[in-house]
Length: 254
Image (spheres, rainbow, N blue to C red):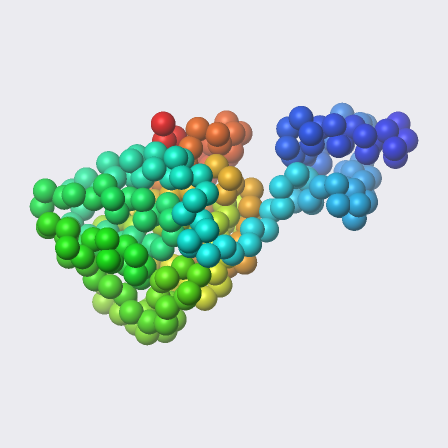
């Protein structure tokens, strides 16, 4: 099979599956992995695909930052379903951390505890939504406010967490990649989120299926540091299996 035929085959597989794997292409086309990597590089240069770890994809694996007022209109139904599944995990915890982001913010609408609950958050929208809620105390993390997320970050915010422990953290991400881990597009907030993850006993990631196989600029943790990922039903079975094998419980929000 010549190079033109290989490229047509690769593009056909991309169109059908949205991504390709180097080893699978090597086996199917009976050529070396080196040859497939060269083919993928040429196709990427022609802007026909994006190279990823171990293959190629139709989607850019590097996500870009969007303002929070734009994000709130993206996948709204999925976010509501994810939030509904997340609220059941709060259970008997008397303290939780809520990160910034529109998926986590959806959870605030559903928090109506029957007993005292302390919510720790760097997000202004979260604090304002919950500050007058019965049985809820809000610990607002202060610091420099990042305009695209309306959330605090920086050394002042991090120092507030030095003497705090918490039962559960709910965090949104912009990318979930098996090799790179979990990431966000706002590098300024990455350090604070990393610290919040370390002080939480249980970490719950709220992310719709579009966040898988993507990367943001700021890595916040590995998959092994996560206890739960709540996502929507469009996530692929292969992705669920991969994440589960890393010790993470995946909840599909219906």
